[in-house]
Every structure is written in C-alpha cells, then in structure tokens.
Image (cartoon, rainbow, N blue to C red; front, side, top):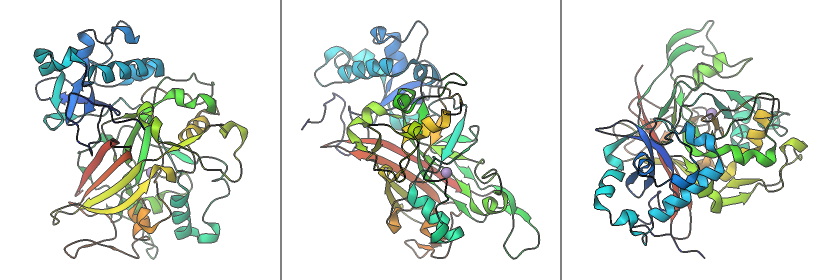
Length: 420
Ligand code: MN
C-alpha cells in the first residue's frame, strides 16, 4: 500500500488538499489581480509566480503565460499531457525532500498565500453549462412523486443520459449569497397564476466537470476518448425554485426555476487526482447503444455531504449523505452523448451530473426528496422545521474521496439564501 506523499507544507490527515490532490482554482490576493493557483493544506500555491520564475519551462505550456490569468481556460485547452507534466513538477517541487522552494525563503513568501486571506473566483470562463439527470434514485424518487412508482422512470431514461441546457451567466463561486427568485407560480386549486417570491426554494446536490480541449462542430467525441476532454470536477448546488418549475416546465423543461443562480466549489479536482478512487461502472440494463459503451467505464467513490444552518442555529446540521457512485450514467457517457450529434464543446464548458441521490432515505440530494414534496418536514435542532429553504439558511455541500491515510477532497460549495 502506498504511503501518503509528504510535503514541506503541513497537511492535516483530514485535510482535503494533500500533495496527492493539488486542485486548481482562480484566487485573488487582497493586493493583486486574480490568477491561477493550486491548494495544498491551508495554503494556495501561486502558479503565476512559479511560471514566471521558469518552473514550468519543460511542461509544454507555450510562449504566452498560462497561469497569470483570471480563468483556467488556456490551461484547459492544452490537454492531459501538459496537465500531467505540471502535476509532476508541482508534486516534486512541493515534496518534503525537495530543497528548491522549501529553502528559498524569499520565493516562498511570494509563492504561498493563506487560503483564508484570498478570495476565490470562478475557476474558468464558463461559456456553456449543461445539467444531466443521471442518478437513478433521484429520477425514481421524483418520478414516483409525480407519476407513481409504476411510471416513475420514463422509457427513454435507461437509453440515454437525459439533460437540459442550463444558463452559464448565473453560475457563481461558493460563498456568494443567493437571492430568492420571484416569478410566476400557480397553486393547483388556483384559477390563475400569481407573481411573487418563490415559496419552494430547493438545493440540488451535484458534481460537475470542466471541459478541456474542444472538439470541432460536427465532430463527435467517441466514448473511448471522452476523458481526454475532461479536466476535472467541482461540487455544484443547482438552486431550484420548485413552485416556479411546476408551473413553467411543460413542455420544454426548466427555465426560470433554475437560471437565477447555480453555485460551484472553487477548486477543480483533476481526473489524475481522482484516479485511485475509480470503480467499474455497474452493469446497465438494458445495455446501452454502442456509442455509449466503453470497456473500462467508471464511477468515482466520492462521499458527498449536505449541511444546513439556519440563522438561529449555532452549528450546521448534516441533512444528507450520498456518493458519486450513485450515478447511473458515467461522465464519459454524458460527454459522448452530448457530442454525438455534432455539438462542439469548448474549454471551460461545465457539464453537471444532476441531483445525486442514493437508495437510502438520508441519501436524497434535494429538499424535494428529503421532505417528499413538503409532506415530511425536516426537524432541525432548536425546534425549527423545513419543507424548503428559508431566508437566512446556509446550505453547504462538501465532498471527498477517502484514501489510505489521506483524503482527496473538493472543499465545499456554500451559499446563504437572502430575501427577494
Ligand atoms: Mn440539477
């Protein structure tokens, strides 16, 4: 069994950011412009400084700066050979036995920032955003509520990864407040709709992956090459207004119910860091069509947790625990399906999983499912109850893969709901 890697930077056993991880993000120090960094322990490594100092000379990044930018898009375009070279350089440079940076006090001062002293931005300019519907248990729960258990799963669901095209402009980084949306809603017994703040604000526990190198319009990405185009993953909260959704969604799907805000975690965990946590994709029945079949298709064993803290509560309460293994359709299948008709993906595009619910009652990734559409309100410490998210509530999603003596974590995506 491999022992955990050691860095000269202190990394706690339960830290999400050991030397095995090195997730990428865009950070802004108080006194400077946004640039790219990687997280280690409670520090951020300034990649712009390292690049300027020549540490990535042999990584094939090209002539123009890649990291002294406010988005990772240029780095994403370069593809896995360059990503792996940079990762190897960083793992060596930050290793406990490497003196180059460890013993250079002046350079260390410029390279390291404390995470609690910087502001995290979106990791990339996200041009397009798609949200799938790939968890069987989520589809089954929601389908059961609206159509009964017999008809819960639509006939197409087992043949293709269902999705809708979302809205990229309203994706925000973790920490930003979420304004309760106003819109049209109609109670079942009302004759006509009314306008006002949503009364059924929900979260959705999701993960999402960032696209690396693009494909040409008209040129599908075969499933065997899908991971060449996937840089890494983030956690996502797809805030949803269920009452607005109920009134607007037929026949074209979600619109204003989901375009008011989507929050993502700031650190992108690479596929290379998640490699040890791959598990074979469970057998699918019926067998998918050939363009959705891959010999070594996989899911990740990543634990997911949802915490809620109301304005009155002293500490957050865990309201759900799930796992990325609960995805029926793999990320490779999602990507192959997205492009099979010729759709071109761009570096920085975001493709999300859909709500990741598991078979257990506490593994449900939305209030819709946890309270069964409000029928069974959640009990919170202090006597409060919740059918939906109230103003002042903070919702936090965290996720990590558990290794032998270390964790490869995503950190968290958090957001507090404020009134309309
Ligand atoms: Mn969603």
